[in-house]
Amino acid sequence: MNIIMLGAQGTGKGTVASAICEQTGMLQISTGDIFRKNISEKTPLGIEADKYISKGNLVPDEITVPMVEDRLTWDDAKNGVILDGFPRTIEQAKKLDEILNAKGEKIDLVINLVTPKDEIIDRMLTRRVCTNPDCKATYNVKLHPPIKEGICDKCGSPLKQRDDDSNPEAIKRRLEIYEEKTSPLVEYYKNKGVLRTETVSISINRMGKDVANDIVKDIKK
Ligand code: AMP
Image 1 (cartoon, rainbow, N blue to C red):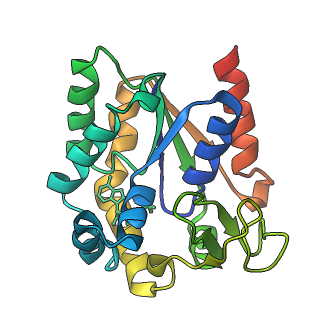
Image 2: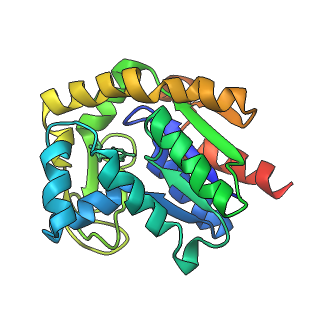
Image 3: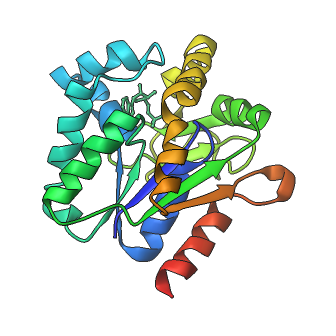
């Protein structure tokens, strides 16, 4: 089974994806996490990607698509994946269809997360991530803070704010790009009959883990 997480920044795609993976053993592939690991290790890919990411722009397809295509060939991706952060444009979605078609696979489910805009910005500003690139745990200082302030519950490494979350210009740019380039994917996958839209909001007391639990129940049925 192959799943895509769709939704603006800060809606909790990573949280929902990792909760589903924990319960099902599926593999989460987050393009943002792969880029951030490369940036922290100062690899040529990371140095190039950072030029775009730090400004809130999309990394060009010539870099992103082959990176995902390669990741999908790894052994651990054989039993299906949850793609978190890819595709982000119609072009990427079409490329993904081609890549999966060639392997006799397809996208089975697209989880589209929706959150009120004011909540989204607040969540991006209060998000903290583990600095250990092999851990990548995400927290929110208001909604789910770590037990010990500034320290990851899972691996004990320090937490930090993502560079692109602390830059108001980059936040604005990322949300603009989402509206312009990524939101058309909702219609694209709706037409394919695989879209499942879920609202995640403190105002209705429905958070990422609630969505993940419901989806896992349905997957297991
Ligand atoms: P994310 O962690 O998903 O918010 O991604 C962080 C940043 O990585 C984005 O703002 C983009 O600059 C870049 N990025 C992640 N996924 C993609 C993608 N599919 N296409 C282009 N750029 C991406």
